[in-house]
Image 1 (cartoon, helix red, strand yellow):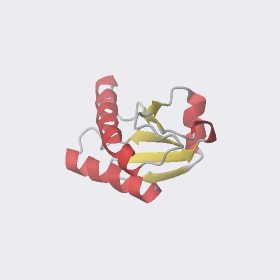
Image 2: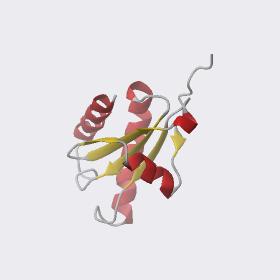
Image 3: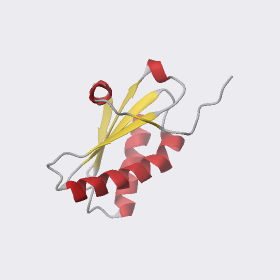
Image 4: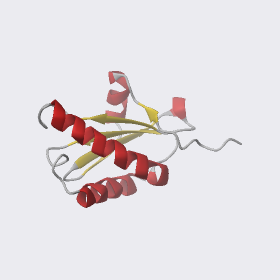
Length: 114
């Protein structure tokens, strides 16, 4: 029996993001986390990040995604389920939220989804 890998795969195609959109989600003040089971990738988790232009310019959107990427690296191996895809969506508060508040929002969302 093979152990699941801690390496997180990436969602790259728009169709993959749209597939996850039809799953479960948790909305928090600073982030929205979506998840959906993916039978094609049953042994590992894949993750994607998105920030719309409503959030701000490219610098702000990239900052939001960097912050979410770091939190996903920290919490998905602990609270994520193998065989599921996750999408982290930045909100207006993501860029300016205190790190501790953002960390709590991501952790609570993942715990509720698990």
